[in-house]
Image 1 (cartoon, rainbow, N blue to C red):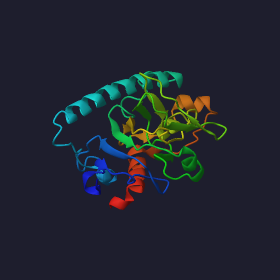
Image 2: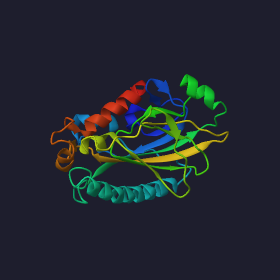
Image 3: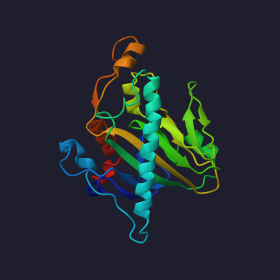
Length: 250
């Protein structure tokens, strides 16, 4: 993985950084491909093409087919969220997320044999505590390995036990802004609670790269009538996060 590839490709164990600490996982990262110059300088860190293994000719086809299904599912979920927020089903189409930036990772977590030490020392965690950058995250994970933890309102870390045949759905930072704080992004981390290697495939459905994200009128009405957040261009937000995570590659 390198800055010249737009931070796409294979990431070795410990290269991903969360809150200044290496994460104990390896991954294949892909993003929506961005044509050079399309969004100006703000997109430069993410310009490039995805990298595909030469010895697996069907990998790219299956990967891209899966992404199409994930985008369709995300749009269905967002229609329901839009209605719950007092808007129309198409609130997140058009200039907001009609041409979504997306990302997907295939992540492998090594076995864990001393969970208590990891929790006490906050070291050796599969993926450190964070919220997701964008709009909506759908996680396809091993059905029989508990690893994902979320922090509840009491500040306790609790297991998000996998349910066979389902996706875990996380809310991202941008939905907090659009909902004017009605929806809170999920603070989560990963500790592989198993003596076995674990695989997780998160898909990140994001706003349009150039979308201006600001509280929806319906959400302002539901929260006192004023905006609690300043407008943010999603691409600027994303580029800043990526550069912080992968500064070692520059």
